[in-house]
Length: 290
Image 1 (cartoon, rainbow, N blue to C red):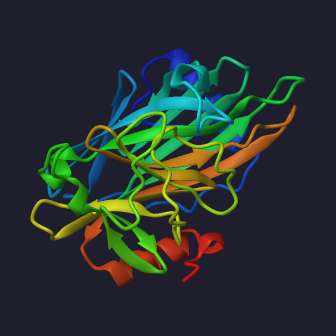
Image 2: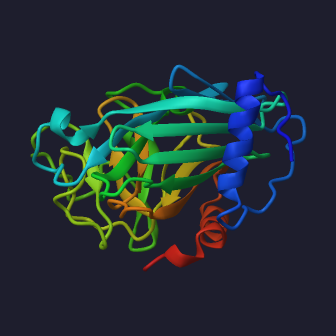
């Protein structure tokens, strides 16, 4: 199997290594190539950029990845939480539909990323591997999705465009109760039941437990929704710039351990029942707990 648009012989070799690693897990369902008007992706300088002819705001930028993080992060200085990493481009297709990345973390863990653009979604397939003889210190990671262009809003007024799901219902920000105290403010964190509340972003931590792993926002005209989810996920987060996060969970890989992580970013019509139906099809293990 080859990847179109190879950048160099070295990049091709890296891509073949990546494909060999993907053979260790179940391959994702093939995403059909987008027709004209679908989404396209590029990656440079640690930013994944999504473009599309019908995309509100013309493009979405994701700091991919912002950080890999240790546990015990909720009440600790951020500089002590971040574990250094380096991300490199392994391959990119000429049609801007597929990108392969590799993150190398300072504790020895590698994370291979295959990112595929479809008609109205971006599919993320990750394979994390700890080749060392010691447990990894990395418990979670942050893709930071910038939504200023999509919402047409700025830091001081974008909150009402954003949402999570509470008791099975789409609930816009700021929802009650809205936490205001933390080591760093502002911002808001929602933690799922299975994640220790000592291990999330050191921003105000909500008492509200989300009923699924989706977080998103409405476009400026209200006609489109951007929503994202990862499985497993560590937290949902509204940030200190015009951003939203579904931060994925690694959990501290044991020596030799591999872990699959899946993610989606949807850009769809503002039809909430259809969004939920699609999310539950893509993540059947994380159905709404309404």
